[in-house]
Length: 119
Image 1 (cartoon, rainbow, N blue to C red):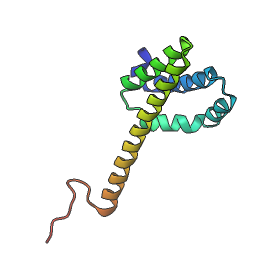
Image 2 (image 1 turned 90 degrees about the vertical axis):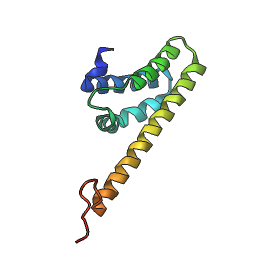
Image 3 (image 1 turned 45 degrees about the vertical axis):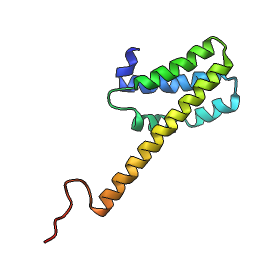
Image 4 (image 1 turned 180 degrees about the horizontal axis):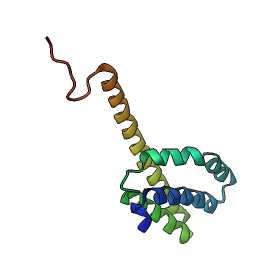
């Protein structure tokens, strides 16, 4: 998957994959929600996709979902989707925790290597 190393293309393809999965689910509400959140999702991916591109774990996870949809295996598709969502939620949680710690350190002046020494 050549787009994996191209961050901008990877983000573009990820958004397209989300839209196609929603369409495959035959869920008009989900499609509408994703459509209305497209810009938010793009901004989120701009923040969370590493500079090296889409992670292999994400590509593999999405590949499993797409493969299951292609086989019309609703049970597997649903299971892989839950697995994917749980992994994304965990990454978001870790990222938010790291950001909170960094903010606290900055706020309290405890950024590593910059702590003031007593006079």
